[in-house]
Length: 314
Length: 314
Image (cartoon, rainbow over all chains, first blue to last red; front, top):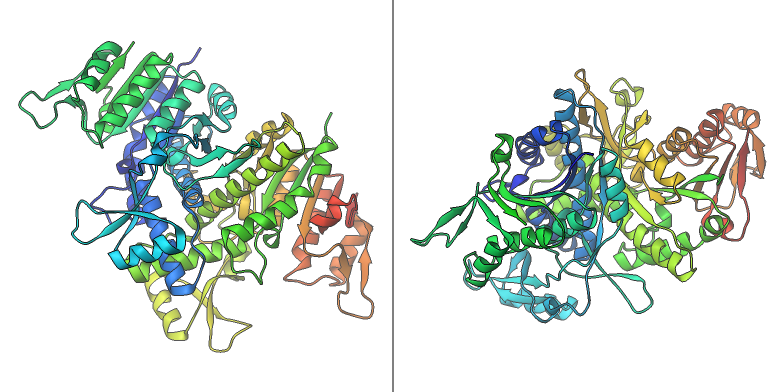
């Protein structure tokens, strides 16, 4: 029986903050990152890949804004923009990985599933919008968007007198098409799914799927997906080799192998950066708490060298 | 054994020419169109859905152009824009159909597959670019795009002194993930695939999949997909109830049931509009010639009423 691994690629695995965002840059980053998965694939793992979409959906939102300004093309809502990004990032990943497999002489199919993810309308996230999306607005511009579209804004922490739209980031509750992902992965197909944390939807009172203007954390969605398909291992790929407790303090320490109990304790002690490493650690813990045998947080490069980074185990 | 039908939705089933292109309009059109499929689904058919993307990818191209002008966001190449459109149109179709099924008390899953489609670099289409895409340019603007990006332009047939980019429309040769589509459909899942005719790719000398700036005819891709998955019936949904021979001439006649031989003869006689009905009739014929038992060209509404439109049979 082959082991199944869910591997979540960070946004920076595809588009780095200091890059302009050309398609060529994204392909180059994807080649570098995905090459590191060959060793897991050769080791016989069944693979499900998820990915971030922060920079890409940010660009799509700005392109929508620009298209409305210049050509009067109606801007698409956030959920539809996330769907756009699943299509294009999924395609770029699929083609890149298929070509790497060909080069390596590995005969495996790759498929991309457009994935809505269900959240709850009662999620506390709807009382506190936290996720910044799209471009910077002046106060006057922001007020117009609030009047026109009901958007909520918060001041940018980086730039003075600049405002950015904020949206809720509710917890993922159900991955649409999870059985299809599971069956394909168990049949040896490499499945790309739940990109960008999934397209946010909720069930209304009649049981109909309705859209939502929200962003789901991609590590949380990946951990839920890993749990639901009965994966053995969850890999959260980021831009550092290890998770550090007390990062930037004298007590800073790289974590190698930590137990569920230790991680829970460290979270209580606020040992992880809230906006950054905490959601990853929580997702790693969620997977272990719900039946997973190993969660790994590291950079793709470490994986390619057979290293392990930070392991959370049962 | 259930019959399998591939159903190709025309672009106007999702966004009509006289509409502005809001997401609400597209959902309304999709509801009207997809409601007509309930009778086939209740009849026990396994269903694969494909769709056009002309208006949507046109908007995405213009949004990319506007994003580059206003915010210096690198525009994505055409293949990546097609992938975007597969994500968003697929998601909108999937959610709409899932809700219709719920309302009808039908327990079936819907899934969207991002689908690259392989063409040949030797296709004669690369000697004669025919497909107009994107916005209108002045001659001066067009010359700049040609110098910067190598784009080829032709004058607009509709507007004076306006130029539009043209791209090749090569024949589809292979549907990536066709076996996955087939297996899912045969298992009773409604599969949305090959949207917009598929994301155009080709195999280079090393057998690697490379991208192409092209547009594949969605009916041709749907007919190939129908053939490859061994479908029984192909439905090409458009905005007229029947195919007419000699449309607009005194000899105009609606075609009800026509044989493979009759259709071949009518094509030779140039009885169908070249840019419009001919590709649909050729796709219908391709399917019948390659083992399909029935191709139907009609409007969705006709289907919903149990009517048949124009049938091409063996």
